[in-house]
Amino acid sequence: MIVAITGITGNMGQATLEQIVEIKEIDSFKFLVLPEDKRIKKLLRKYKEYKEKFEIIYGNIKDLDACVRLVEGSDYVINLCAVIPPHSDQYPQKAIDCNEIGVNNLVSVIENTEKQPKYIHISTVALYGNRIYKHPWGQVGDPLLVSPFDIYSATKLRGEFRVLESDIKNWAILRQTAMLHINMLKDNMSDGLMFHTCFNAPLEWATAYDSGVLIANILKKDMTEDLSKVFWKKCFNIGGGQENCITGFDTLNDGFKIIGGSAKDFFKPYYNATRNFHGMWFYDGKKLDELFNYQTQTTNLYWKEISKKYSYYKLGKLVPKALISKLAIQRLFKNKNSPAYWSKNNDKAKMIAYFGSQAKYESLGSDWSKFNLLVENKDENGNFIDYQALRKVENAKLIDYNFDIDNYENLTLKDLQKLAQAHGGELLSKAYSGDIYQKLEWKNQDGQIFTARAFTVAKAGHWLNPIYTSNVWDFDRLSKKDKIFAQVWLDSRDKEEDYCYYFDSNFKAHIKDYK
Image (cartoon, rainbow, N blue to C red):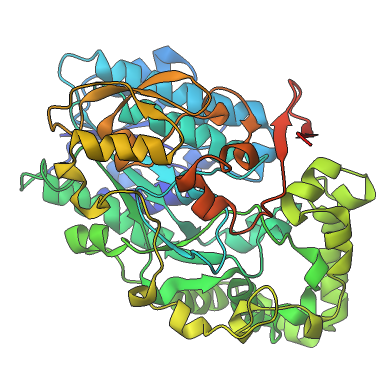
């Protein structure tokens, strides 16, 4: 048994290797590693007793030859690599090369391999875009409304679509939620990305450890059981469990407890975006856990481990909180990825995308008593909302798809027609065999004709719009006719907004007002 893996030096990759390296049925591993990635040396030292099992292929996933060498002779290919924020914001072309072009290469090679390996593709919660308290719970099948100017989610969307529409016989797509890993604090203190996290955003966390356990359990179970009906050719959300369903503010607050403070001691309301993030609580998060029993760690356990591993953080209790805020947090206001920088440099496009307007940003101020926090049982207007009740999955308010999504495998032609109509489009195919993987012809509301499997549209939530072919986020316009999109998009947007967000050829953010 040969297992090929991309992204092995990343946080999820390292956690995965730790769990699968001792699986006896695996004879050898093949790792695709960037030549400049210095982390591989440390990894090889850690697992020196297994070096005879490791084959290192130095190359880039954007290069077809590297993908051929990785796939050749493999029984499983696990794609963990991705260029993620903040690196995707800093180097957008690298995100395209890896998350989009690279995936296309990998899929093409597997398609054309005589003995196809099974393919596990790690996708992301970022595809679902911004969520607030109105629809904090979501599931596979929900509309994919990637947030404006998030090149990471746009490229991951295109890569996932390629997998869904591929001729790979056995694939599985796993949409990873927000992931807690050992390097999280360090990785988030060098860029303005931390200010993108909305205080009231619903976030479900899973740890890197649990994610590694998941991959190991998939391999172990697939080697002994037939998973063709329950796992392969399906899409899942990787969740962390209901206890790990919190908000952005909760997350920051839990982190700052290590140094004896709270989020309010170090942040002000105007520091962070109020919309345009990504995250939600997974209504269907139990499905993957019921299959592979991987959810073991809570956010509380994670922070205890961080406090134990980095005991010097506790020294922060001795330092004035205002000084820590100034030296560790406010210094990032100068970073190009921070709202303070956008405001100072009159970046209208991003201010509108992330706040609604410059005026709304300025109105946030510094007074926490005037800012409505979901964890304090207040909605965006200051009205009472029961936060703990909201967090209970049994109280979830779900999207109306115009058909029974739980019964997606038994959809009829009429069901698919109604779904297309709800999107403001049309199903052009006149016959449907009942095979959920049948490729059908559709027309979107702009009159564009596209081909996609019934599963891709009805269960995976994909629907052709400009973001699939260009860096254009046109959801204000689309949601005016698309009833599926509107249910989520308008939760955090005014109906009167009529903006088109887009990148130019140099990845500079722009906005066009249709009015």
